[in-house]
Amino acid sequence: MSSTVVSKSGNLARYLSLPTNGKIIAEYVWIDGANGLRSKARTLDAKVTDVSELPEWNFDGSSTEQAPGHDSDVYLRPAAFFPDPFRRGDHIIVMCETWNSDGTPNKRNHRFAANKLFEAHADAEIWFGIEQEYTLFDEFGNVYGWPKGGFPGPQGPYYCGVGTGKVYARDVIEAHYFACLYAGINISGINAEVMPSQWEFQVGPSLGISMGDQLWMARFFLERIAEDFGIKVSFHPKPLQGDWNGAGCHTNVSTAEMREPGGMKAIEAAIEKLSTRHAEHIALYGEDNDMRLTGKHETASIAKFSYGVANRGCSVRIPRSVAAAGYGYFEDRRPASNIDPYLVTGIMVETVCGKIEGVDMYAEGHRE
Image (cartoon, rainbow, N blue to C red; front, top):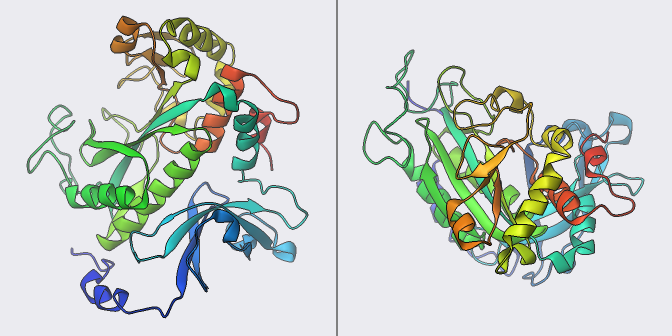
């Protein structure tokens, strides 16, 4: 059965080339009450050069699980903006924080608290690199490219694979790669993953709060591009039961101290701190992560913290090159593919660099 929802991009291109008479389109993007993305566009009178020039806006939070119907206005405060790879020109896409009418952060606005931590620990110069795994489905709910009503061959030839029957939907992945580069996203690579129709892109190294901004925007680009191909993107950590790999968001972490010669001591000290807060981190590391962290398929058990050099079956991995050099970074392999990166990077800096008054990322992740 052929798709009925693929965009008519060829027809659209004729209209995107029309002049807009000096007007700029700004697409406002925000995180909804189900940890998904929403957006809407508005017209501005001039090119934007700084985020402070962007006006506050609002939306109906009762339609996004973010507010009750009797008090439904939720406010959008621009936090970062990027060149628009779809409309191009001077048009932009804006990452926004959500705020309630009483002046408090909305329940899905975890950026505000995380940014307080990054500002307090700016001297640590903490870098992140996040590896976003995801799975592609067709519009009818079948894993994209898989035999209808059946399964492909077992895992083995698909990871970083090349060739028909080994990789699927490469056109979507290439389009996403170029869109991210155009928009200034610090995308550092892509690859096909272990399960067929599962892919990964990496963002980073990115400093502090910009990690969350860029990962959310890269996700938005991916879903928006997938529209054009009639493909659905799943960020579920275990989209298919059985002997198939799950999907994670491995989070690589490095402070200035870790990057200096002798930084292994700082890496080991950070890992020791992580071991004492395993349950709190797991609570913020994504929904249904227990389905993925089973101790199988290159994961550690969710019940126990572990670490090791070059061991992808541990909670935290120290790359062999880092162990040999004696400085660098570590990889937290626990986060699921559906994380809110503001929560993950926030609790990471809180644990590694220290708590600050008025912010508790564990409580933040459970705020209603």
